[in-house]
Length: 84
Image 1 (tube, rainbow, N blue to C red):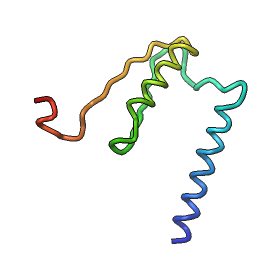
Image 2 (image 1 turned 135 degrees about the horizontal axis):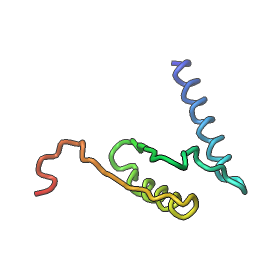
Image 3 (image 1 turned 90 degrees about the vertical axis):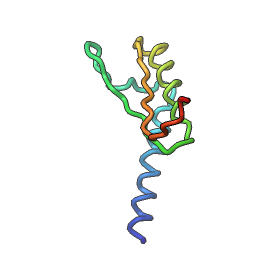
């Protein structure tokens, strides 16, 4: 159990450090190649606002990095009557 806690604490620190780096006065550009298309996959549990986050990232890429994002939302939950 102590090993799992240590891994969790280390993961939280890595994410926190990256968030601090991104919120600096001069945030770094994403490592996207200028001459070809790239893919980003946002994954998470249902209800954790992935759609909002993805939209914000797409708007940021369009406004700040002169990209033309295309968003796709596949329905992989297997709800057959979701569209009825």
